[in-house]
Image 1: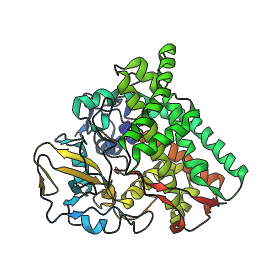
Image 2: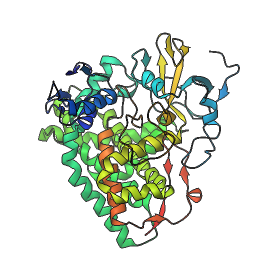
Image 3: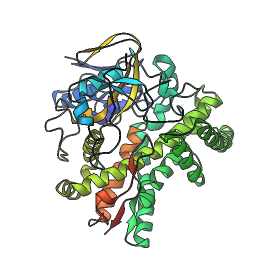
Image 4: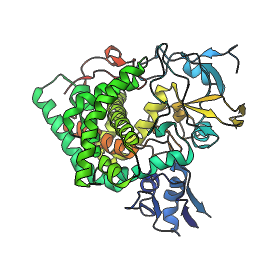
Length: 64
Length: 397
């Protein structure tokens, strides 16, 4: 299970941070999304799936 | 598209102040349907949850709004014309160039740092409302001034120009506005902002949004002024309307209001459900896109050049959540469309969330018995703008 953000299309909406604050952050340099925990444990997965769904730019992916 | 057999888009005579225009739900029930707008432009109306997400995120739909379907019955197009800084009508890399540098100012953690200041502004206005005594008008005491002060602070603009922000917004969002009057107001506000820009240049700050644009982006002056005016306008108009609409929705649903009062710490989840339901129930067809090639949406082929208008009635689609037509403040937050979707999703969404959470929690904690002083159907609503909200909300406590 690997979480990724395609930073080339990220708009820095922060939806991933709201959905899964333990997995994502936003960069202080440019506000874009960052993956803090690339291989999240099972209990974090519902939040990650929520982030995949909520991301307006559709740039968060979870490879299962 | 031909004009034959195309019904006019229902946009007047709401069945209820918080409900859709009469005939709207019936008209869209069969899936994508072609309708004629009051300005004589035809567009497909897409109303399913999946369809709206597709239209707003598929790059084959352009955000260029020159000649778009509009609710105006006279006059000329005021908003949505291509001009420097108008990122709302740009696509792809051109849009990202303007949008991405602004993200820092609306970062979740930055807005969390701003919460104590928002709380202070809310408290000051509720103190003043209490001192003046019941009955009070919630719109002029709280809904209008609070978001206006907050967005001015986020941009780094002196708050004494509030009147001018509001006048410019009225010209910008008026249904039958005049481009010349809007330009005159925007020029006046631009003059004020130009002084602010000089101050930011001198201080070198990046702590507020204008400082950030001046000192840490490649935006030119025209772009910067357009963005600043747009953000000031959007920042106070929308949040202001929605705080009023949410409060009225809660007054109408006392069992749901009891849920907020019981556990105000859940204001974050509650705001998501209020946004989903309130926006969905108001319905109406608005946000336009134009197909740049043939695209299939919800089983119909939308041809290159066709206009599409999405409706956020899609927030009531059962595909999004069970019993989607009902307000349920105990529901977990779902991926609703209240702030739009795709690369143009509301830039200020996280600011609006913070403000609405603090406003609702504080209003109903400090005034647990606050209630409307007149029945909802007797209140005045603003029908002359492309945005919608209550003109006054008389309350007692």
